[in-house]
Every structure is written in C-alpha cells, then in structure tokens.
Length: 278
Image (cartoon, rainbow, N blue to C red; front, side, top):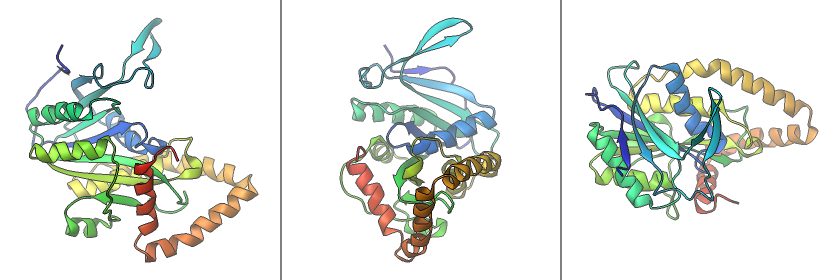
C-alpha cells in the first residue's frame, strides 16, 4: 500500500509550504488553528493524504467515530496537504495532521517526498508552547532559523537550544537534507489558558509568517475572533481575584523579560521540548 495517496498534483506557482501538527507542539491549538483559518478563509485544492497506519500508536492516538449524513464513520490519524492559489504571487501548500508516534525518520522522508514532488523549495513550520506570558500583551514569537539578519528584522527571539526535539525539528532536518530552506516559528501561549484555543497566538503566527515569506496571509481577518476571545477571558479573570493578581505580576514582569532579550521564554520552550509533560 502506498503511504502517500495522491488526490491531485497540479502545476504550482513557486510554491511555499506551511506545516503544523496537532499534538503537544500545538499548545492551545495555536499552530493548527492558524492553518485551519487559512483553509477556511481561502478556496483550497486537496492534494494528498499520508496514511498513518505505519506511524501511529492507536492505543495512544485512537481513531474517532463521526456521524456523517446519519452514518457512523471512523476517522483515522493522518496528514493531509492542500494548495491555496488565491493569496499572492506564490501558491501556498498547507500541510496539517496528527503528530506521528512511530518511525519519525520514515515519516519525514514521506513528507519531504510529497513536498519535493510539488516543487516546494521553502518550508515554514509552526508550533506553540505554554509559557509564563500574559494574554493581554503581544504574543512572543520565537524563531528557529540560521539567518541572523532575518531573525533580527522580524524581531524574533533567538534559540540556541540543544536537546530532545519533536517532529518539527526532525522534519526541518529532513527538509534541509532534501535541499529545501526550512524555518520554524513558535508562539508562547499563557499556561493558565491551556485548556482553550488561542486565536490571538494563531494571528501572531500568521503575522510573522507573512513577513517571513513575504506573502499576505491576512492575519487581520482574525481580529473578530481575537476580540471575542479577549472579552471571554476578561470576564473570567474579573471573577477571580487570584487570577487578576497573577495577571498583574505577569504584565509587570514583561518589560524585564524584554530587556533580557527573552531568555526566560527561550528557556521555557527549551524545557517544554525536553519534558512536555511537566
């Protein structure tokens, strides 16, 4: 059985890929939420599906049952690719899926082969982690790139992390080995809001991605979602004196973190990569 099921393989215009995986490297669904927003906002063409039969541990990531038109269907873990042609002068390939549990090197080879067949030369991976940040302040974004001038121009917090990595780190290495340019953007999301999605972090990722790729991903279209989210969170915070006091502490500490170059946030993502269960 072929691992990649091709649905359509059109000729794309200088395509760039944006990749995210649902799972532990997707805190508050910020990374996957950014890509789902792109797919919901723009017409897209389904390109291919990578079957996870060889890459999933179904006792950990179980298939789910859905009712479609009155019929029960099983949704198996998978990774899917779409093409969006309505954003700018370049086509955008969106790759979104469940984080694989097994055979990461083989999985990375399949994703690399898929993107190579589509003519992709640049790949941006998105991720998000839980940090000691306030939801009322701008979302800190950490960039993983070997281009120091680009990092400075975009105002990305640097990382010299060494240690255990996730599927995004493995994929980026595979992309580079395959001759592609590869970057990652990570959003810091408030740890006290870990149980809900975070459109503000999704918007921040899209804003940075737009500048990095020089493509207008229309992050402003999330303004309404962000505003409603902030109102809901503000209502919850106002009902808790303890949470209100903690939020003030985070806000007061933010200028000090900025003066220190964001080292604490970088340390937090590095600790998150070492032990996401902490």
